Image 1: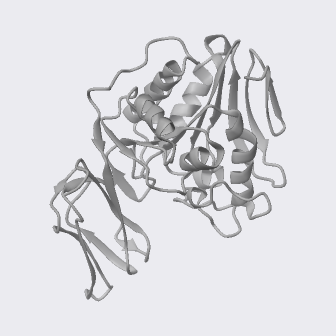
Image 2 (image 1 turned 180 degrees about the vertical axis):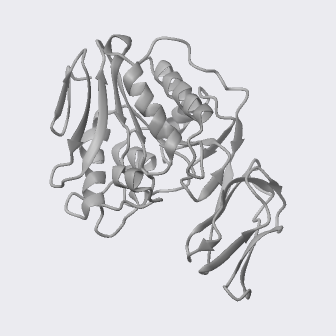
Length: 324
């Protein structure tokens, strides 16, 4: 790693820790960042939280870790973006960036566009200035206000078998019981892998806009364990190789209609292929859509709102079998 880490207007010398709100170039958008540049050389680790403003455990865990970890404990460097989306955090807005001219969702625009809207420019800054300096990226999420979820860890989408194998090994050194492989393209950690060649993982822990202190502690423990596995921090990482359940398939359901959403199963339930798990009705009770399980599996995420718009998520179901 370089002796000095430079991120926009922020320069942090080896052996220093700096916590500062920086302004994204070309905007008035402010990002709260902590950089812990270790006394010894090593890998550079990035953790991001608050991509969605009401996903609290990840945000709080980075707030605490940024205060607790000191440079003399670090070989390499640790970069924490405490909240990618402060306007949503302070404004209590789900998913979108309220400061963006088009209310864009950061998870839908990676790796951004330096000539685009505000959110595009913020995303481009992260992927042009920060991610390329890093060796590993963890993006920390929850279910925001609208989702109830059963916690799991996801391996980034990649066409590189060695990267997938490495990320899977890192994931096994966390306390997550359930693991999936991402098939998506849009999320930050996927863009780090696909567009910048930086391996990464997604944390999904928490939900419904709640701050649960046990979840904060588990997030902290897992970040520390990953840094130990990467030899950035001293100590023995968690070994969960035998205790993690892998879901090789998962399904994200989206509504085909705007209306009232009624679910007949909830997070953690086991479902059977073809089982009716939800429906959409209009305000007058007319059935618009039935939702059926695509395979035998377990409900990992469920929407907990009554009102939904066409294209909103309904359920995420994981399956432990490759095929039916």
